[in-house]
Image 1 (cartoon, rainbow, N blue to C red):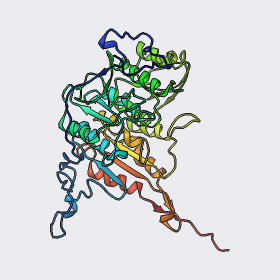
Image 2 (image 1 turned 30 degrees about the vertical axis):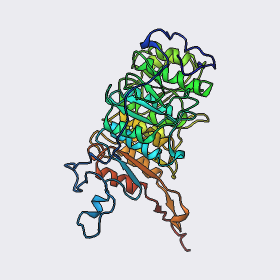
Image 3 (image 1 turned 90 degrees about the vertical axis):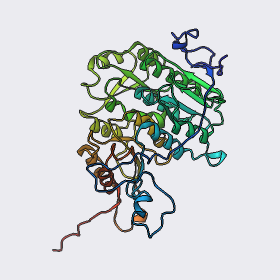
Length: 421
């Protein structure tokens, strides 16, 4: 029995070319089964980096007394938070996803519970990035991550605490299972299944179109082979609902081609330079819609270029102060999906990347200088930036966090007085 009566165009049929009889090709269908329980706010796993003089506590505590020598550290400063940053300090994306979901949906009152959550394999960064689109309206599903077919304790407890109520646009589902992940017991589920990342991204796109009763006008195409160039797409997908679809460097997968064709000549945005997604692919894409490439030569600069970009229908356009920003480690690509709800709520904003050493690249520090807030007379009349730091201090060092904090800080604007005579 199907839990949704509608297909992508408001009909009851699945997307073209998808067999309802074969499990590995099915679009989405209801299932149920397993358990819930456990959330760590993510700072667990913050250990001391060899580059840091700051001793990171195992987790922030509440109620540390002033007589205690390590009171400030135990309260979480400067690792858990500084004046302009907050760290989701998981040792892995699974913990980060659980913590992010609870930060966005505290679930302490009925109004702060999500209607549905997305459950994704934490080892599958491609699906985590594509499934970020489920956080956008009208579904609004924060992401939780499994350990393959096993439900980690942090994910179980987060799901238990979130207690999703059921989403009408998601066919009444409380959990959207994306790929081969555990089946939560006692909750109504919808399955999105595909044979490979491109097929699964197509299923996510079709599900989103069914929930909105229309396909989106924009499509984002990213590399399925170079995760650091694809990661910034997750934040935008969570904000906009625009689908993230995958390609190899030199050939467009048939599942991606079919997904784009269903949008009927959309605006196609290719994220990454030609060394990552070749001109052969963009030529192929032009048969399916208009094509715009956004990108730069390295992953950090590529993320900055995407954060800056905007046209009338697409893009962050963050070129001025007063924004939220999310910082992630390119060595942990599933963190992009785990953190994506932070870009679709609170201080909405793009995803930026640190370097492979956990430090701040020049492209990012220069960008933060460009958008640093300033004031002439009174800082309380200014605007402010805020940064979410994703991962423990092995992912992003405390030194990098301190540097980010300083670059986000509102600063006095010095004006030169006119010379006399």
